[in-house]
Length: 172
Image (tube, rainbow, N blue to C red; front, side, top):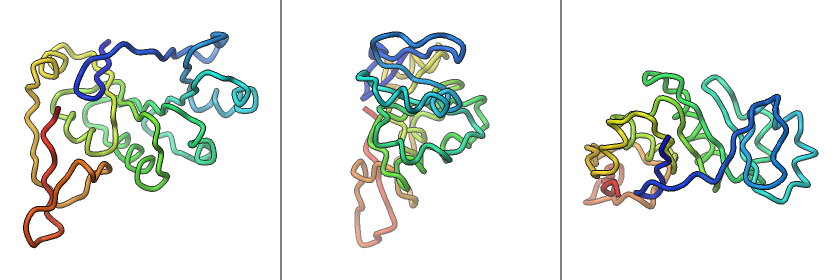
């Protein structure tokens, strides 16, 4: 799988141990929400970064107070047509001010890339070969004129006298 962040493919430094496996002694780990909540107290003493993996249908209940201590929230798209992960990303960024990495995993396709970035995702774990090729070639077509603000409003301009119109930056 390929990890796309900030306009390029990068090496993933995170490990995602299964719920029944022991945690590695060192290195960044991302755990399911259930495991994180169960082991929350022990994880506070960990010096390496900790993250949480959410699936569509999960909520942020029980996690909100821990968000400032998390470095990563990975949200799994179970299928192309499921929009619940977009809502989770917007809640993380807009309502809770989460400043860590919000990563899209699962069924990440080229038609979704621009919307994922607008919703607050800043890293995409891509397995689809066509999407990987399109990202490598900077060949993602995106609608750039919007009425709804993005989670990263700094990436937009408001041209002209109509403050509700927005133009997003081109994908990098």
